[in-house]
Image 1 (cartoon, rainbow, N blue to C red):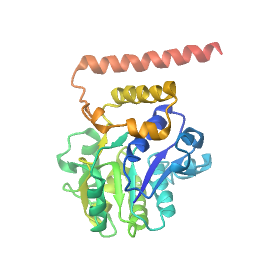
Image 2 (cartoon, rainbow, N blue to C red):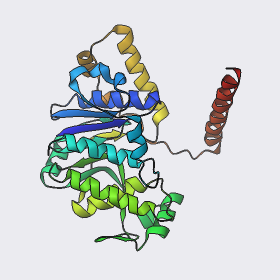
Image 3 (cartoon, rainbow, N blue to C red):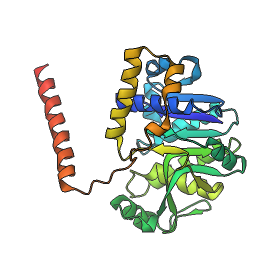
Length: 291
């Protein structure tokens, strides 16, 4: 099975998250190859020959947004490119904000049985309460693409993990891209279309299993996890530890005790975050005006 990680852009947090994720997967001996699809190859010299870089050019990132200029289509095209490098081997894609916990063999077993794997089932579209979900349900209900029909029972899965059998990977990814492009032609809000396209296509073509017991996805608590990751790598720098020493030092048990999702129910918490964003923007404006 081949691991695929995709990172691009200037946000350094995405890159050290990706590095930490790769480090966690190096604890397992089940992976044949690790591909990093990125436009910042210099950020990954730490891993030397333990990974294979697929280097992106700036124009690729523009072209991959597609005819409807959809940002998250880049992720789909990057996974497709990595699949072409896998030579028919099983593929395990993970978002940068993930870490391997345990039991990768269970993912392998699902793939051997011809099934797909995504991180977790979020629920039927008609049962989800978010504004984007409601808009998607209203706009896409009754939508047809080939033999695929969307209704209120169509299920949304979290796309922080996408694992596909090697003999079906490229076909499935390309089908998801085509469905995503078609959905972009509607008036539907686009924010989750890439995730939903993967969900409905993989569910229909392969069936789906969850990877919540195998891989932690801290999309809803990044600030806390980023602090821990920075501390881990700062210790590495100060002690000049090697990659092998860092792999040995890494233990998922040190991290999974912390929540991966925190729901902000407090108005005070939301206001504090908003004030922080405003202050950051004002600081950037002040600095730029002085330059």
